[in-house]
Image (tube, rainbow, N blue to C red; front, side, top):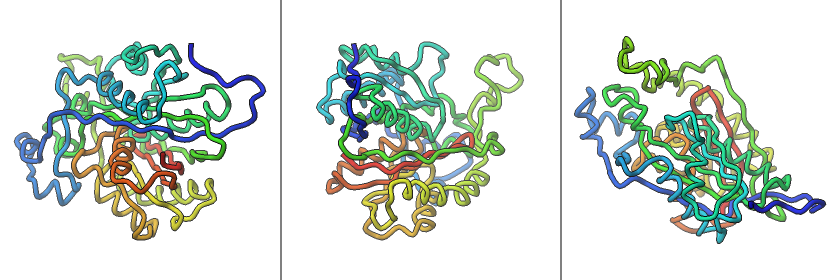
Length: 333
């Protein structure tokens, strides 16, 4: 049975205690993507900053990738699966209604018997799930919560669609959230603009089947210019609000880890926020592509591997389909 905080235990806070990731074996360069769309390596690099992405092989299922990332995060945190009270999985590419992907992941973890559920908030899903994990640990609902973002975007993207085929990739990233005597994950700033819900959307459900009028309408579609405009007008204010919740200024940050949507978007946010040069900025999208809910934990893993960030504050910021967003300041493990 999962561990719970004893009744009457003093109020506590939450922090990230471990990070892990999984990148599929197959590396796909721009030249390969361009075989099916009217584009070029130069155009893709100029418009998105992406040089390559990873596509999962048949044996690299969502649950296998996620469980591998979780195992790494648990090892990093020094926590066993038997101690985990909850697994929250953020994904937009899980093609089954039941069971939850989180349950599939839990079945691959030796001794896990806790709660397991999924969050569907697209590219902002990881940050939403992290806020739920913070609240669970801070309230005593669980001692340890695993948050995992896992995507096989190659399953839901049309490889002939120029607006999406070159952008998305596959992968999984996870963090372990545990108790802390001081705030290590500050309360999130989250919200949405439902008037833009169709800007990143799947026009038809998967149940339309092969006899539908246009099976390509089952794949993800994106109005890139509309999304870029929304991010530019909305996310700087969200970032400022998240920093205010932590009583910090941009000058206090050690790292900035936004959703890896597009390198132009990442760089535009750096400019809009007037980030000092010493702030380390995640640009994992260059080699990994846009992995939706997996992009922030994967980028976080890459940044931490470079060293000199442990114990310092970082701003995480997810945004995407909905149009939804979620941002929070965390202390890096």
